[in-house]
Image 1: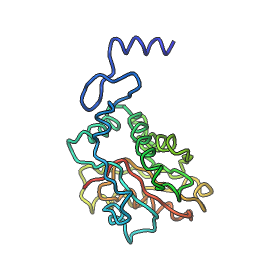
Image 2: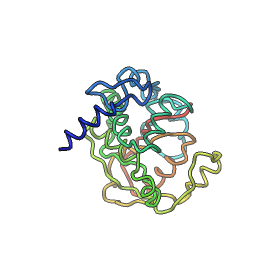
Image 3: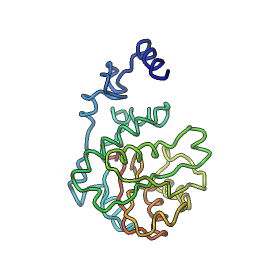
Image 4: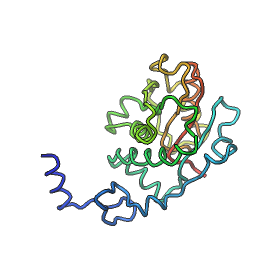
Length: 228
């Protein structure tokens, strides 16, 4: 029945690319192959001293760090992130997570990783949005790599949205935001900490600081996008 309904909806409302608005091929979802290939990759994983590594250097111990795509306002990639977060298309996160995972996997980027941990969202915010997009990104990375996902962090304190805050305000806004939900899952494991976008790095730093209290073996950082 679901297949029949989907077929009817596809006839009445053909799926189109969220970037170019062209019709999608039968095997494509959300983004056509041409637009997906044109999204700007950073290539940061090939540089051990890349700008994202420099962003966190000396703040906490980590093994590797990368943002897979360049993020800038009004870019095609930014429109996908906006649709994923605010227009109820969480599966865009699954798609982009699979792309990032598949492209990074052959490079050895995940060599020190045993477990994927998505950055959590406060319960009330998740109820309001209907989902945590980072869970979907982590699931996509897992699909591409075979690495398991554990929701080993929680966000017990509600916080202001980061979008309009200065760097100093973002850092203050992250104080005591996260807590460890499952110490046993983290202890002794190589953790891949996953988020959607890295701007100042305040969210990742707060999440990593919290993870470190549970004694992981190593922490690797991955975001879909990173600001220049």
